[in-house]
Length: 119
Image (cartoon, rainbow, N blue to C red; front, top):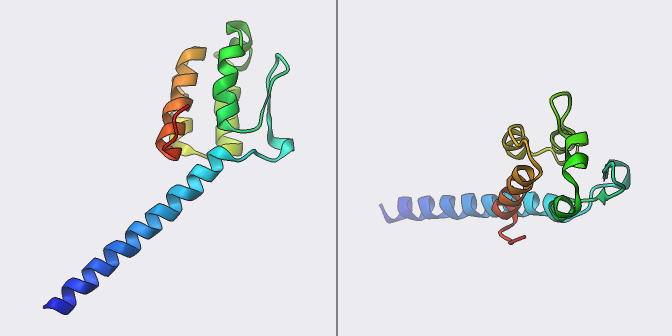
């Protein structure tokens, strides 16, 4: 009986280690720069190399520039997340963001969830 309990405990540790490794991998994706050819090139000249830069960039971005990238015909931020960042949850949450502030909030929440850092 005691042997069985040890096996269960070991299994839980392995699962926790695997979850920790997966969390680190996700965090790294949010903290490191994407390759130069995959940077988000904003219509106002800003260049975003990672999620953190984009979050900060929303503060400097005008509503008109946001509307250029996100309107009823296209959503460049969503497309960048799908194609480059490859985060399905972030992409799904971002689909409904209709303003600069909503988009920033979606990015901030996901960034915080994944990295355990505050923006």
